[in-house]
Image (tube, rainbow, N blue to C red; front, side, top):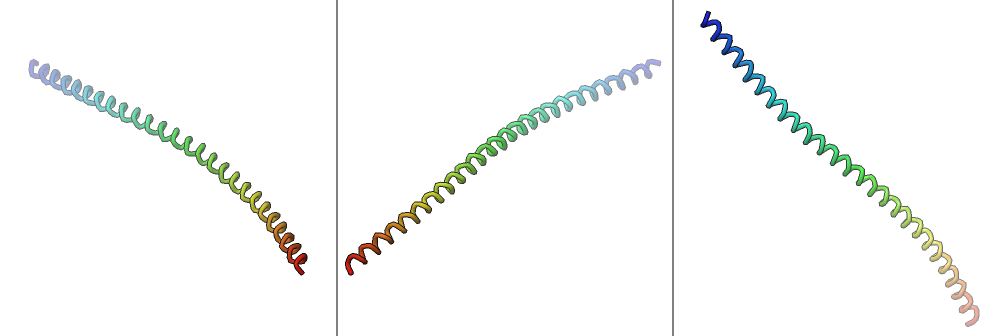
Length: 94
């Protein structure tokens, strides 16, 4: 009888050790999941910031293109004016 009791105590002790080891493993995994969640959140913020930066860059490129179009139009007008001026000077010299 005492051998059975000793055996049961041994089994209960082993179960207790297994439960403790499992609890430690679960706690460790929980910490890892928390760390991953923080990383994912951080990466989400980075992606959001990059989205804002891309939007600002796109807006700047559009403004630059509009300014270039305006400059080209003004340059065209200036060229026409200079051509008329050159033609007038040539006509006067003849």
